[in-house]
Image (cartoon, rainbow, N blue to C red; front, side, top):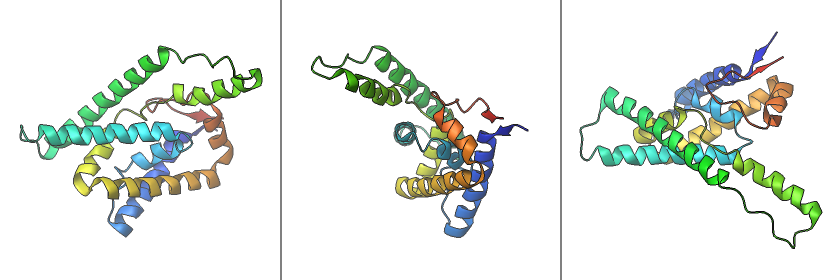
Length: 192
């Protein structure tokens, strides 16, 4: 039987998000977001870039709302659309920046340390926004309940989801973390 790790993570995230909402009255950036973030907690650069995209989306919509009437469904749809666009642009900018090339290590670096430098830079080179709609969903909740409460609830719930994943499927989670390039959120993560 094949296990879809992303589906399991989102399912656990749904339950944890619902519990957080009922117990503490805080939304964790949308119901599905903690499940996505939990899978990427070992990639803090990706999480930081995703939160930066959400924050940029939040500020762009705030600025736009001073000129245009944005409320209700229109605001929600615009947040997701702008979040998607910001994520795509950030991913393209990161890819272009890192494709330009990382400078070779200085000549005075010992040969045995060159491999460590290359390995350390590999994580930065593969950084990007998590998913396509995650920044927009988080931005919606930044707008509704504030940046700090949303970020705190998201961080806490993502850690809880990650701990539950470690307890339920540790081998599959290790396999997922060991893959050199994480599967994008549009694709399924299947483990045999």
